[in-house]
Length: 295
Image (cartoon, rainbow, N blue to C red; front, side, top):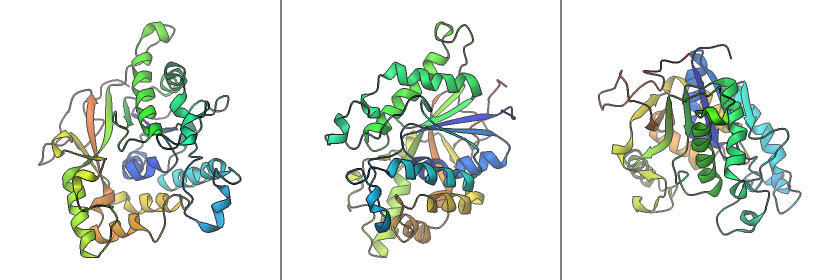
């Protein structure tokens, strides 16, 4: 660790970090913050969007996880993040759980079926090593209900609790001052739906915003990172995940039709710590490290 500001992100699969926090990560790296990413699985059950790589899928050669490790490394290079790890590596490997009710969700080695405290203690080791003042993860619904997202939330929050407890840290606890959950505000999705309708796209799969599981009320937003200066880095990181993000698909169509705001603005809910100025015109924090006192 080289900085007196340290950020930890806990995500479920490779590509989640870029979609949710790519601009935030690039911004803080550029500002000299030590950024650490912990990814809980290798995304073995993901759908392969590249036909020539379809044989990597879990139902074929089951090599997608290994391939997505390289995609993650390429994405982190695009964002400038040098400290990225898989939870439990190298001694433990958690497998992608797939969606609720699917066969992968029943596997004993999938992340969804991991012992919570065991997985959390593996993350505690990282917390005690890097001593982050700020942590970002999902909300209790995992954004849209994926089992691995929900479990990542549970593990991250439990690890933060255990790391702050002297009984679980050999008397050397570390309290994370500020914890944020990713959030996608209703107003942003509403604007996106209108714009995509104009070009005849069904990107959102429904005309009813209430059918979209990851939409949250705007009043839950406490903080906004304006990463417009880092849009190109985020787009390059998204391009580094070709098995999951189609370069000619809806993610980039959304960006092209809504401009930088759709990917450059990343929203958060502060769930531990105090919202601290400077604030923008809407009353949102504009720096996740504002008010941090530990070094």
